Amino acid sequence: MPNIFRIRYIPAETVDISGDRLLLRDDGHLVTAWKPIRPRTDFDHGMSCVFLSEGVKVSRFMDAAGNTLYWYVDLVDIRYDAPTDTYRLHDLLADVKIQPDGRVEIVDLDELADAMEQNLITREQGILALRILDRLLADIRNGLQPNRAAEWMQQALAQAQG
Image (cartoon, rainbow, N blue to C red; front, side, top):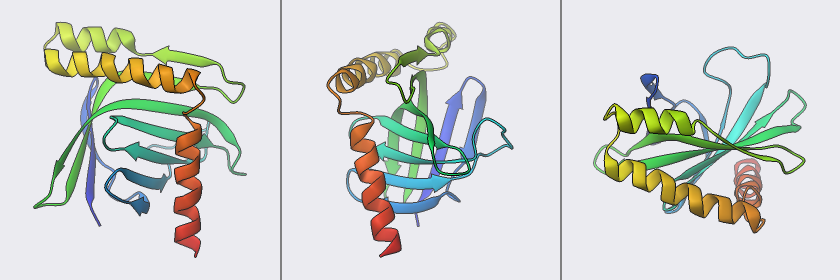
């Protein structure tokens, strides 16, 4: 079982999410099921698919009945340490929220600018965030995301149950 840490710059925090239920792990993906870290009233649980080579963590937020409320995509700088089997998902601040009706919101660009301005992230990480965001928006326009994430989640659930 790998160690997985989510590292945020604004607010500054490192959260150990290794306790999330790991459903699938291969060279390109981590698929997890989880409950919120802090009590929430706007959703009950979720699933996430980290695309390790693409720098995105696509999360499906659900109600208690399992209905999709929305998709949320974090841009992440992923660092893996093989000797300790540890993934560090550095949140690159800008995110994309996708509503069930297909509406797309880009959020937290101000946080990305603040982090760059305050030298909380490197210039290279800022550039990486913008490149990932550009590819992600093209994937969304072309119908690839969140559909690819949903397929990986279904595959992971089938493997976990079978």
